[in-house]
Amino acid sequence: MDIMKSFSLEGKVALVTGAAYGIGFAIAEALAGAGAKIAFNCRGQEHMDQALAAYKEKGIDAKGYLCDVTDEAQVAEMVADIEKSLGVVDILVNNAGIIKRIPMTEMSADEFRQVVDIDLNAPFIVSKAVIPGMIKKGHGKIINICSMMSELGRETVSAYAAAKGGLKMLTKNIASEYGEYNIQCNGIGPGYIATPQTAPLREKQPDGSRHPFDKFIIGKTPAARWGDPEDLMGPAVFLASDASNFVNGHILYVDGGILAYIGKQP
Ligand code: NAP
Ligand code: GCO
View 1 (spheres, rainbow, N blue to C red):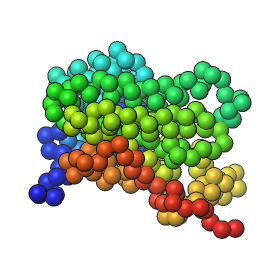
View 2: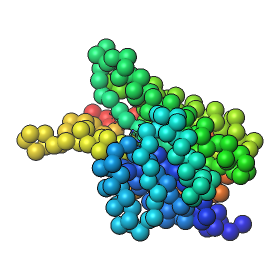
View 3: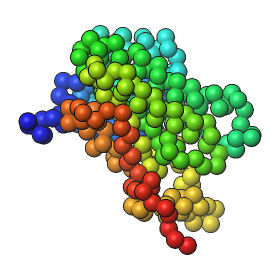
View 4: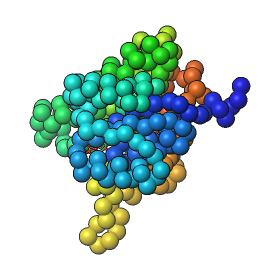
């Protein structure tokens, strides 16, 4: 076995959802670096323009789609177009996601549904759209971007935790249902990563000091730092490549050790 070759994604087609910036962009960059052709989507033209320029700057010829992942018809159209222009999707990364930080008793049912719709229903919709092609082709890789909240709760994130906990189980179910077709479905559970999604938790205080949540995360992470989107690059390539062909239904937590740690003693 050529071990280095088993990590190569040469000739593979990857769809990374919500990869205009943040974690999705870094994962798409990693998959491209390992040889894959990249398709991505986001919702707004402004983000699309910025993303296409950012991919170009990295020397990546990515194909961008304006597509809301909660819309089944839009997703079907995007996947059909990717098949025509790049080929059947070999690797799907369900990355698009949102969070709403609202105490549960103040959260409306509509707000709760919106989070679950994007963070849980959409991975179902996009996976469902690519699995038939993967079955025909004889292999496939699906990576669901989970969270610390797939395992832990905290104040204000009930919808997000419910969705990401559900996404962990959707991952295991896809692995169970389609493993016999040589499809591996795994999750990556990032720890606290510095992206626009977590920017409000890192905002400097009026006196210039660190946000209390920022300090809390540094104390809760054995690595004593926030993660960078780049920290997800190696794990994503591993789970997208033949090197992980017997890894199925697993959630790989990339959290600087948060889940292993009881926290700093007072
Ligand atoms: P981010 O910076 O907010 O980026 C989210 C991306 O998703 C954007 O490209 C956004 O583009 C896209 N998006 C959102 N809703 C969409 C929809 N309905 N259809 C299509 N695209 C959509 O988030 P991030 O921090 O990179 O997080 C990426 C994923 O990792 C999310 O699933 C998040 O929950 C998860 N995660 C993040 C962290 C963290 O600490 N940052 C930790 C664990 C897990 P548009 O706005 O243009 O649509
Ligand atoms: C929060 C954060 C988290 C992270 C991440 C942790 O408010 O607690 O936004 O939920 O984004 O998902 O893994």
